[in-house]
Length: 218
Image (cartoon, rainbow, N blue to C red; front, side, top):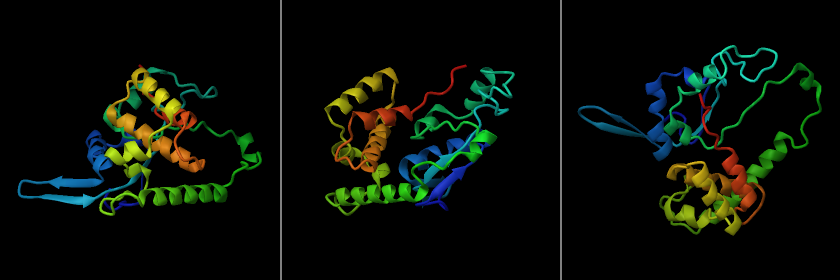
């Protein structure tokens, strides 16, 4: 994680990693520091990363695939996804399902918004964040919304009235932890930046909540 500091840490086939290795990710993802403790000393390394992880929905990978149906569904998926602990799931902001691409889809026209357009929107959103953070003390100033915390998070990522009402209602229904609640705020703030909005609105909060998917029930 320290080697990926200020970059992307990509972990493929996430459930196949040893449980101890996955659990060791939790504290660095929260604090941005990786601490190695031994009998004689503690060493702390910088580890502020963007974690991107990929996994199949079940061990065989055929869940919800009508052509190759999983023979043990839904138990196969529940057991496989249970390899990722709840606290680690809680630290992942965006859960995105990527369905299989059929061969016929490969000949479809490209999406209306290409990568260059998306990159420009991201750069503009980052610039909005930098300008907003200039009002904060230089020491400990965040580089992006993902690093907002405490009073700065409440002040700079506060949604409008409708957005706050939706978030408060969803927090009870979805049983969001305090960590999950704050992560929704950060994601909603970023979505607002991508749309050029001064404040997160109900639509931004709703989209941020949609990315927090509960684990598959057994």
